[in-house]
Amino acid sequence: MSYERSIKEALDKESGQILTADEVFKISKEAFALRTKSTKKEIDLYCLECHQPLNISGSKKDNLHFKHYPKADSCILKDSKFSSVELEVLSKVYRSKESVRHKNLKRAIGEKLIKISDVSNVFIDDRFIKDSREKRKPDVYCEFGTAKIVFEIQLSDLSLKYIIDRHEFYQRNDISLIWILDDFNINGQKQMERDIKYLTEYQNFFALDESSESFRLNCTYKYVHLTEANQVRTKWVTKSIALSQLKFDVETKQVYFYNYGAKLQQMGLLRDRRIEKLKIKRIEDERKAEEQRSQHKVENLIDRIKNEWKTKFPNLKKIETLIRDLNEYEQDLFEKSSLFVSDDKGSRIHYYFGKAQAKHFNFLAFIINPNLVSISLNELSNEGKTILETIFFNKELEHREYWVKRLAIAGYRFQPVDFNLFDKLYLKKQDVEALKLLCQLSESIGNPLFKATLFDHPKLICTMESAKQNRIVGFGWNQSQWVAFANNAIDSYSEYWNHIESAFKAYGFWDELLKKDSKGTFHKKLKAHHHNPPDYKRNYDYLLSFLYPEAVNNPNQFIF
Image (cartoon, rainbow, N blue to C red; front, side, top):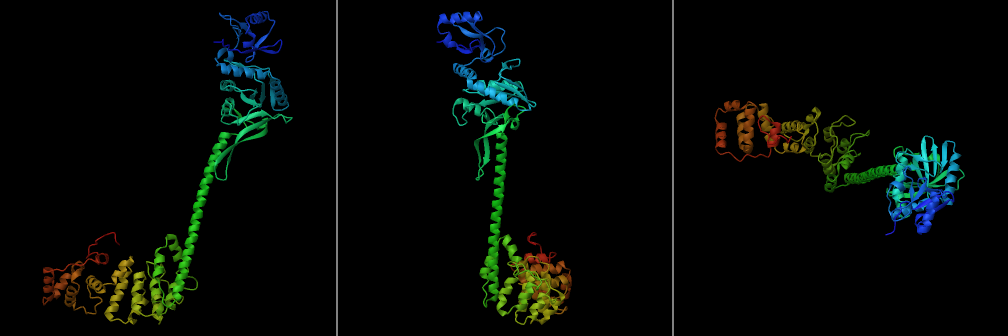
């Protein structure tokens, strides 16, 4: 195994030559002759790293080597252990420092820095920086404002250990280090190129801009940008910059022009904002497109309804299906259309019923169907008429009793003038009375389905109401016919007698009714009924419990 020397080379200041240990100590006779010259001070040997004097020392096996004097200051070649590969790299670095190119760059940097007014204390390869552990002599040192800066020129490959050592030393001594990379390939794959590329978070690399008479650096940095597809991308960019454009990281002592880490974060946030903005825009565009489709759909529906008004035999089944298919937004558009909303020309409901002919029967039924259309029924016409007055005064319209019931089911609130019109219907007096009662009761019911149920069995409702009012209503009988009224009820409405009897009792007329039965006819019917009761029907339980809660228990308290 060959002898491994920690100091590969030394500088002979007398001749300016670099002596390589493996060469000058190869032949023993010549090696010891050289040692004699060193001892006699005929040659002046210095360390290429720390520039301290060296001597030539021997070993038990007569292996000569360069060595620092015992009281020498700290030096990495003296205090650290390097591999043979690392020592070889260091040797190349030291040789490059003595090259013409290296000396020219040092001089050019120093001379240009001196010309800058804010720069002071410029030293070109003649100032040592020491701390308690080491000392270094940078290629160029200067002070720029409050910042202390050193420039280290790199012309050959550097080991990662060498790079980190320099960085930590200057950081420890509150000095910012700028590597001048003379022949650095940013896209290179050599180990040194990869090491130095990712050494700092800023990823700024500097070379002297020799095309400029003043001091400028060519800064190569990783530029962050956002593509049209909102993808964060980077590319290497080189820009000539002045010393004043540099920024200094106070904590790490790193020097940079372009803050890659911060820009990357900012671009990520910008990308996220753009994506969110595009998402919101897409949602808004989709909403507007959907609204336009809905508007077109409603417009087509309205046109169809207008055409049905004009036709002799309107077919509204398809239109009813289309209306039920409307979503909430479309339903709102539909109900706010000119078909149903009144304007300065007058009430729409009065227009339809005022202009209607016999052929419009189905259309009118459609227009006041609360399950399909929301139209104001209680508006007065321009002449101050109620909708019922408009109907009665339109001689083309028949079936007025039907329209009275349909308006009640649709939620119309009857006025005193309306009830006066009931006398014009082709009805018996007791039926007019019953109709008035049902219309009045309908106003207390909100559910259109129960309003319709109200008109399904008017005599049952009149019987219950008679029990409640303690007077016979809607039958045309005088008030002395209570026993006959009760006998008729138990015979005609036996399947609902349980509710009727309960009503008589709840509203305080039961005892009076029994007293009036002097012949006992009602008692006999009552006894027979309870002896063989029918199957009571429950189809009106919800309605009756709402109208007469004192008499009929509510099957479901949440229905109304």
